[in-house]
Length: 304
Ligand code: TA6
Figure 1 (cartoon, protein in one colour):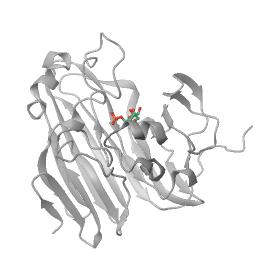
Figure 2: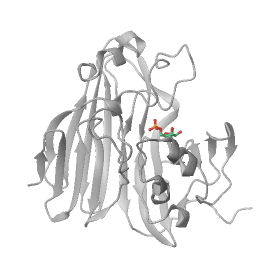
Figure 3: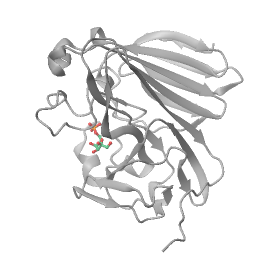
């Protein structure tokens, strides 16, 4: 069966390949599993809470309406918890929208968000609809979000797909095509231009890359072989994060503790700036994740 509603989660299977599947937890509309030809593409902590008590540690948590913690105390998102409320609210399963590739949709509105939590955003005076579409093709997974301002109040927001990728060994993995970009290093608290042609991971890493040209792909390459190619639509920024040893130890739901060696977050989003949405306006964006493929160098790595 291509689409199975299992109560707290929905399982989708590609009609031509039973080993290509995905599972979406209705809590947070979090993709918690994506297998392509039997290979797990996403990392999910063994300690991840899947009971709706806290955001899922792994898979593809959804960040809205704020990335991180809002630092401007006058901003309407200031009182919200880190990464907002989309990832810790139960979304409605809206059904299947396509046979092949198989696609399903989930929706979130104010009525689905904990009242107290929702009141922390602009005293609850915003009205919105989020529609997430998850599309499973034989050679890719696409997650698309549509945000609509269904109220009278203009609001601004961040959006980010907080994707955790499954790796053989992060110390053998490089991330490409982020050279010469402005980035904010969350560990140093500093802005600088990325000079590394390929990012490697030998310690904690937490950087927000800004204005990554949309025609550029971000690739994860393991000893010369492409593990994953990421394409983006309308998501100009990308966060790259590995918690490494100390941060992993500090997260109770991050297991096993050496799991940081088997994962890397590459998170496409609109986070450097907020998106402003007036009454009745809609905004849409997507990430397309393609396992394997050819190395595509889109920066001039030979330039001094
Ligand atoms: O996306 C990177 C980041 O903002 C890191 O700074 C770290 O906080 C990570 O998200 C995980 O955040 P969480 O709230 O899920 O523990």
